[in-house]
Amino acid sequence: MHVELQLQPFEKLDADMGIELITKETLETHSHKPTLERAGFKAEQDQICTLFEHNLIVCGIDSTHNDDVRSACVSLVKTLSQFNIQSAKIAVFNLESIRAVVEGFVLGGYRFETYKSEPKPVSFKRLFIASDTPEGESLDTEQVKAHLQKALLIAEATNFTRDLVNTTPEDMTPKAMGIVAKDLADSHKLECTILDENAIAEEGMNAILGVGRASTNPPRLIHLAYRPKHPKACITLVGKGLTYDSGGLSLKPAASMVTMKMDKAGACAVLGMLKAVSDLELPIEVHGFIGAAENMVAGNAYKPDDVLKTRSGKTIEVRNTDAEGRLVLSDVLCYAQEEVKADYLFDFATLTGACMVALGQYTTGLMGHNDALKQSIAQAAERSGELVGTLPFNKHLKKLLKSEIADISNTASKPYGGAITAGLFLDHFIEEEMKEKWVHFDIAGSAYTESAWDCNPVGGTGAAVRMGVEFIASLDV
Ligand code: BES
Ligand code: ZN
Ligand code: ZN
Image (cartoon, rainbow, N blue to C red; front, side, top):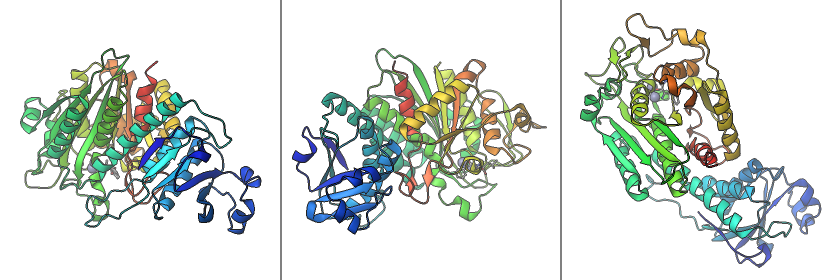
């Protein structure tokens, strides 16, 4: 999908179809009101009516708020893709709605057909944005261009993340993820360091090694760095990259194993954010650290009852091999904090089913010690159209991670509050001076969907990319 600004008013623009977003109020004075009403159009949110004789397609919206505009554009791109037309034109209400239109069309129009022998051809490819609003006011061209460029780059990075998440575990092994990272580094002038299993062993990261041991695809630790000339801040992004999570010896039931290719979504989001910040040339130094491994079953698998010695020196009692993400992250977080002294430390992980129980599948769980920081992330999420909810730590839940044999257990002794106890487990690996700078994002629910919602088709959603980039961009003050 190609979205471009055309420096012409809507009326003068040459496209196969004109698009209009109509509220119940604007329907009242619409020139085609009788025809639209005869067709049953009531301007309800996402309701579509096509008037081919006027080369016009209209869609109802409850308001001109971005959430409603984005949702309408998703319905529009799905409908337009069924027609034999190539282009359409739209007028935006204001500068902010450019983002909603781009998200609706570019994210809502996303398809993943890599594994289809006959991908479905779609003729609708181009959307033109007019230089004026539906009321005929002209918009500032430079500002429109800037908003459009930013929205497009972020949406494309989100689709890049989706492609990676959707790639099969057969194709996206830890080694393959290293190659993707290297290619991204080459095309975006990023620094790239990749540790293979031997280097990971030399660095004392036995938790990653333990998790990856039963797989024929050995683990990788990936470090990407974007270093602009005069950075205004420095942020470290850590991603859980389980290219497959079978559960290990604490094997998942068959039905729960399906979709576990998505357990690399945190890592893929980190790659997408690095792509976007470098494409946008943001003046913020950004580091991405990814722990890529495959949690499998074999004679040499790590076991419940094992004790793993992490890079930090802390020991972990393994009580459930399916709680592997926190093990991988314990080593990666430690390594990342040693390598870079950042102003912010965020980790992204499809960490717990419990996060979905707590917040529902659409919402990312935010955890950490710094309320103001979580608040500003929530505001960035709101602007970017993503949903977040904060889950509070407390000292009682923290006690549930005690181990008789090691420093800490990888599972809590009680099942309730599982997303929070997982977050509190990670907290053990955050250095004292980083506590206030750290936020944990549990994207277990939001990273992948088995039924379409908002601008997310089935599969990887690219969760955290939009809000992460929005937050990083907000550091440029
Ligand atoms: N990758 C899963 C979490 C997950 C579940 C992500 C469903 C997306 C959808 C994680 O490794 C896991 O299995 N966590 C366990 C932890 C438990 C054993 C303490 C879980 O959530 O059940
Ligand atoms: Zn697991
Ligand atoms: Zn997992």
